[in-house]
Length: 425
Image 1 (cartoon, rainbow, N blue to C red):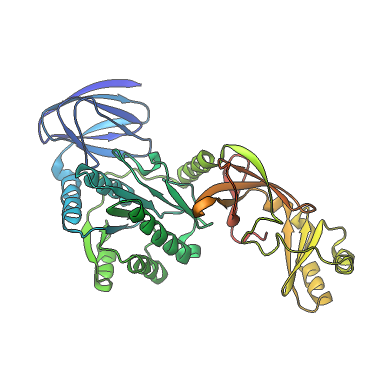
Image 2 (image 1 turned 60 degrees about the vertical axis):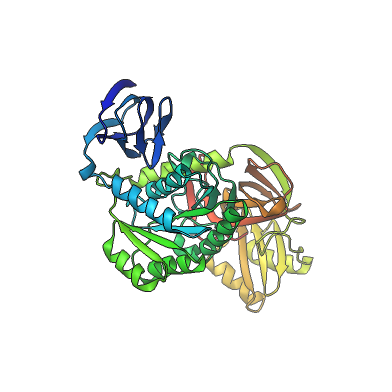
């Protein structure tokens, strides 16, 4: 780790690439809209870079580790002043409560601008809510969740905030969960205001190309009655959104310097965030007694005659349950059920649906546990006993469970994604 003392005159700036910690030894600086005075500090994470502007003559103590670095930067080369000016204009002109949606393509600076909005609100002493609706690269909560934080101190990165409320979407692909995301944002915006926040700033995902993506973003802004929409780094998107919305729509340039994260970097960040929220206790929950979104769990076991017919085609199975219009067949492994065998079963049962629940692919499913007051908590199914319908879950939540909701993401032991899409449970 290198330790550097940097002296800046008023108006001068640096760009600092993390990981690095910054302490103000003297003077006043602006970082991400926050205004830090003597003895205040700020941390720049790996994969992040921030412009630091001296608001008066100052001295900074910087501790930096590989692959971090420091570069000289000039205000004219950075959109920092433009961002602060726009944020102040939005917050100063917005009615209370104020809802602002931040849009733009991948790596356009959405998360940084959302944090800057929160900091400019906090500078004014305004109670603030931040909603992270980027379910694929979530920061406040784990992937697959829309999360709300109510910060009371400077926001350095959304990932350093603790969520006050989360809503489970169950997918990291917004194209598969647009309606759920919109509903979650609406609920959490109202929740923020119910908790006393006068501003709610919504960070969104980078899916902005194509008709479906644009309609989704428009629906999101309309559904929450957004007061402002800020589009970063894509003027074509800006003009499209501006023509279609009654809200105030503003454009801002993206950061001049961008740290582009590789696909592997993004996977690693998601894995770390899953771990952050799932490492805790292992607990058992009766899936026969606890309501869930599962068609197969909690259903009555089929009569022996039905099970005999199923086993005449598939061999030994762990359980057969029935639901209106179909059967759920529990197997140790999906390999036991071929497409031909499923078709044969459907013929035996005159066209009924046949859903296969295989323990090898059910384990690791990301889900949520709903507690008192409707609060939702991340969990992962680690085992399932089809006989007793007892599920074993890894979670940090220890309270009463009112409902279990299963998603479309399956994780391995190292919290890396090993499956996506429809998971029958």
